[in-house]
Length: 352
Image (cartoon, rainbow, N blue to C red; front, side, top):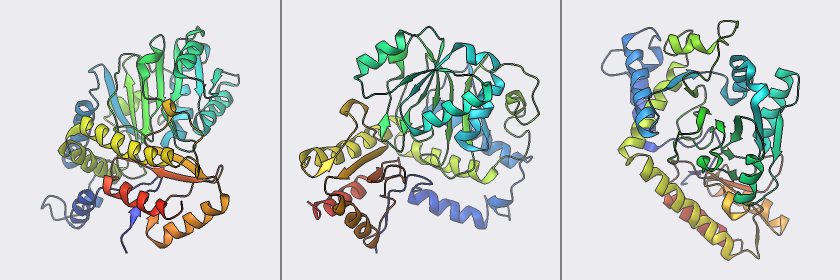
């Protein structure tokens, strides 16, 4: 049975990457030992780190005045790491809460600082209305979650908020489209959606954003920057897999080609759903629809459960919506092919 894996994360890995990783697990670069056995202090791993950072700088067009470093703990750890390394942030920060993950981050910041940051709720305004609300605030920094995986809400046009310096959780859409860095101070992302497997968090910080503080060693960002992400034992295998995925992105035509493919896949599925709007509910306004997580439901709730069960039986995996809202969620990450989307649409036609 053919398997089409649309899981929200950990997500599908490109087939060519899986094949290469499989070989390197047995023996890495004719060294006589596995990639799983590489020392984080070795020249071999230093080379992997250097290549990963070089690919990120090139693909994302990251300016030279940004540092890249790698941590563990996922996006959730960043809810402690960022406020710890930026004590003054609470006095100059506003949150745009567009979904579940942004809300969780807000609540963690609230607990860490023991006071309430300012926030702007997302009420499905138009982009213009949202920008106007942001412009009304005086705070220097704006926190956003670029893509809310649960609700299927995405904000890609960062320069629309050009009166703010942005702190962005890009865990589910980093390296899936091109963006400008001119008003960005800090970006972080778990790798397990578009860049590999769980275990490593990519942190990209503008020089001067992170402050000097009297912190315990692992929390102190400067230790990780100064030691090239090897202050302690990093997740070596996750970083290696990220290198293989970044090489795949480069070989596939770079971020511009990835962005084009992602938009074609998403628009193809949205077009089908819109053309059959009498059968489907799509709650997100068109200008905020995610290209990474396409969330919808059948208007007939019985069809939802039937569809999800049939999907598993036919090899369509990971289509169930998050347990908090139910419905259907199609995760359209970089490794998803247009053929997979077309197969899914053919499968959906059997339920309309």
